[in-house]
Length: 306
Image (tube, rainbow, N blue to C red; front, side, top):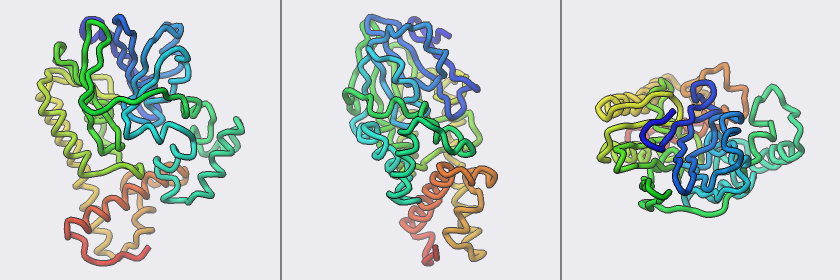
């Protein structure tokens, strides 16, 4: 779908829901794709004829099909390149070591590298197909960089919080912002389940997006173009989920819940998904980040048992 002259959205499979995401394609002198999580068959028409792949951050659903573009230069923000360099660093940054320890990461890495999914009940996180792009990154970009594809020039807007290097992209001449993982169309709310995630930075970064002189906004996980006013309203609702979660956590702490109890309650993800190891990791990391934030704000004054 062409959004504005020579800028196209490649809408992700399953309406862009995780583990897929939307891509943005710029058909200019330097043919460029921002994020490659839309779906395997979405990229067949390019026949490898893409010059530049820009990843908004290192998460699986945004780098998933980088490996299809063997002739393209692949770049990512300098704060996220470490997580892209190998499976071990990826898993540590994604929260695996914090929750299950380094031995679990080593075991997971070996099973992924064996090209055999021995844990089908654990879904895609044990399928090697999803990790072919790890290690395939050539260079970095920095906050505020301007990227010229020829006639189309856009700006890197560093919006950390979701990940340390998470970025959005502003096209001033087109009045367009690709807000990537500020997924305002979802009731799930913000995701901050990586070891490098930061709740307060995520909230501050949202203000950066609204301060842009943009008329149109698109994100990575729903198939809609928003006018600024609608995006701004929905962004407030998106961020309000953080406070809703914190209230729920405080209410449960008052009832005597331990940290372990909180992590098993299904506050972020539904309880029915907590048997999945990676979902358990992200749930736990996000709960811990809330507890730390509440302590820093002086709201939570008791010491919780694990």
